[in-house]
Image (cartoon, rainbow, N blue to C red; front, side, top):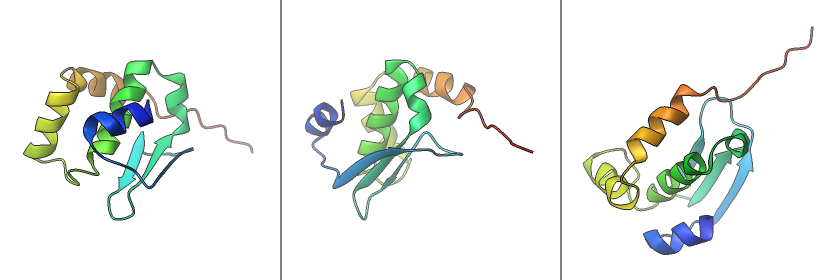
Length: 99
């Protein structure tokens, strides 16, 4: 999916990976061209994973969430807002506390 979307969007990450993240589904650092995905995404429907992949990769073309970013999201994933709402309604993960 990552390779496919990089080609479709005309962007190239220098590196990407999966890690445990407590507050976000994904992150992108445009300066280093690095993308991280939250490991909890593996438990989500494929359209949620695809939304985060596209969202983070688009930050390589547009670092901010302004009008240009939204236009790019609308062009490439027309139903992204519904998927975002669904994903953001879900918990980021289950924390286990040991006492």
